[in-house]
Image 1 (cartoon, rainbow, N blue to C red):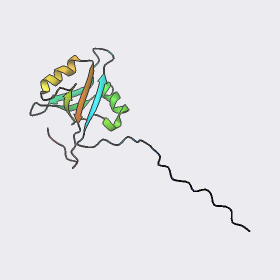
Image 2 (image 1 turned 90 degrees about the horizontal axis):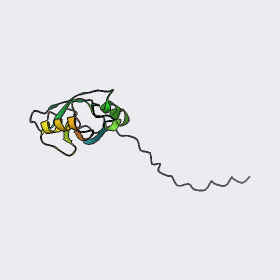
Image 3 (image 1 turned 30 degrees about the vertical axis):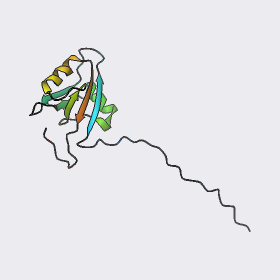
Image 4 (image 1 turned 180 degrees about the vertical axis):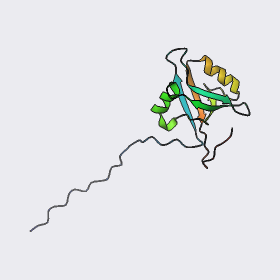
Length: 124
């Protein structure tokens, strides 16, 4: 009996699957929040860093805009201890950044994650 013919050679195909990567500790990422009403809060509690150049995230309201962002973008979730290094492109002065957060309906935040690659909390 003859052996069945070999199937034609099939080249492996690399599947392109994008899986959200857990955010890199110590990395900087961007967050964009847009208010639906002028009096709607972003939901970020913050304090100036000790040198006054950035904002330390001291709390995140999960039921407000930032909580919605965190659910939609787990790879770029803002957590307590993260540092906001710029607000709408402005950086270097925490008080100016805080007042901008109060005045605008759309905000773009540059956020430095709280943990360094070594896993230790970085103090800004």
